[in-house]
Length: 447
Image 1 (cartoon, rainbow, N blue to C red):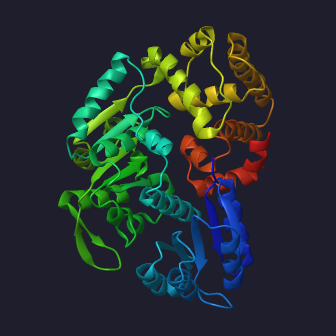
Image 2: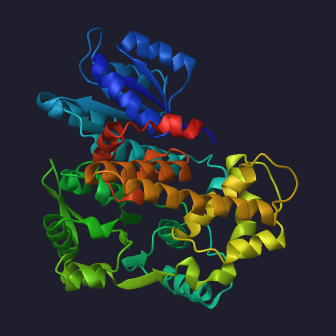
Image 3: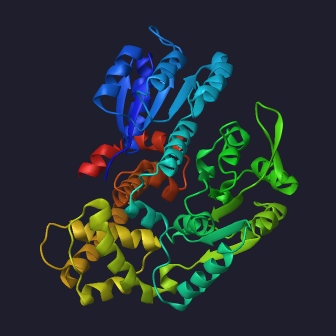
């Protein structure tokens, strides 16, 4: 799988090193430069997929450097400017010249990571050379023939003919985000933008991220805005979103101009919003505006007969998309997996199939191989729990948290962004927690 390559250009070594370490932990390939000259050399070594460019540097300012790159066709990657408090107006001007976005210093980790992810995603959508396999994954239809999945398939066909806002609910790992992408593709194909806003990574920058010049509302026009973890909206954020939707327009920050809402929202929640309305944690009025259509995705326990078909799909596609070895799976092995309890649903099943394909074994995946893997996972837990009981409360909590985070990191191949979603943690807090517990994602991948 090709890594996306990011070039960081900043004359402050502490900032360069901090950003570099964080992005490397997220799975990106990273290069750094302290000035314009070093940045130009890096462009000749490897073309980046994204550039994080500081405005003020000793040899040349970032805006002049960017202009030179654009005028001389030295770069096609999107550029995100980094600026201090006193240079925000300059950074805004840079976005008019050609920068895709800007990040204000001192850096917010959550905003940095979300901006990087969104700009790279937008760039990928605009790339007309996107591979057929990537398009197939993004447009993945529901897999299986159970009554539950056939009901979802019929609902999707009906929803695709509308322009309604939608709420998608379901347990962790049931495919909510993939379903949201499928709905967008059925409605718009690849002709219109599909922008994602993850509430857990927004922090205090909600209004800027939503209605700023490069906010998700502006970039989603004529397309779809997927709001992930909608249940994590604060009361103040709910009030703002309700106001935008009620009046069907918003004011673009820094421009003071009104813009009509001309896109559909697909809101994703792991927890039933109706229950949160009952407890006063979610606005009933906002829910009514978002839930013009509703979709609840079943867990695997409600569609066990679909597990063999899902296994076949992963066995056949993972070798192409992730370069894993290809190995058939015996019917006995499939039957054992069919009857296993999948707490993280499709995501956990996919991770298990991936690990089985990567096992140091030849021939088809056998029943013994599957049983050994599932038994090992089950056997490891009681001994760990037993040891916790002999520790003081604080040490036991730290031991549990470390074991939990390491287990989940292994399941997502060391991708900290995916871990944040599973753990339900804001990434800034997650990084602090991992450092406090001495967890290194790079070492987890190697182990």
